[in-house]
Amino acid sequence: MKYLLSALLIVAAGMAIADDFDAVEAKLKAAMAAEIRTDAEKERDRNRRPIQTLEFFGLRDDMKVVELLPGGGWYTKLLAPVVQDNGEFYAALGTGRVSKSLITEPGFEDVQVVATDSKVYRKDGARLYTLETNGLGVTDADMVLTFRNYHNFDAEGRAAMNKAAFDALKPGGVYAVVDHTRRHM
Image (tube, rainbow, N blue to C red; front, side):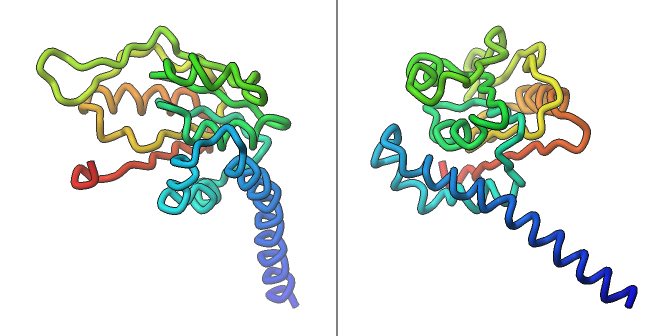
């Protein structure tokens, strides 16, 4: 009987986790279909698999989420709407394009841009970037994510990025890095 009860608890816990992501998945699908996304961005969904990626990382709609180096906001346009009602969303490091365009759009007013004093730059003659930062200005984050840019940084820059990410996370928080190899550049 004890084993049966244990098995039922494990199955029930798995179902609860799946139910938690069902709501997130519905929000992600709505964000993926939003008019703010370009056709080119929507076309990339097929290869980038944002639903599977964010489910794997454990995204929930009540999280405090930090996106590092958001670039043009491909993932920002998906993440911010998911956590808008119940969580918090921060964009950090290299936020120029997102700051100038995306956060002024309806539905993105709550996006907070942090670590604006950080410097992302190339040293003279270097191919890779480095990073100088005094931290992200966020504490107790549930998740820090960065997508398709980690390979662009030298060892010093990656170390600074990692330190800033781990300093921002609460104990047990998730630091998620999606990247690709040089052959895909």
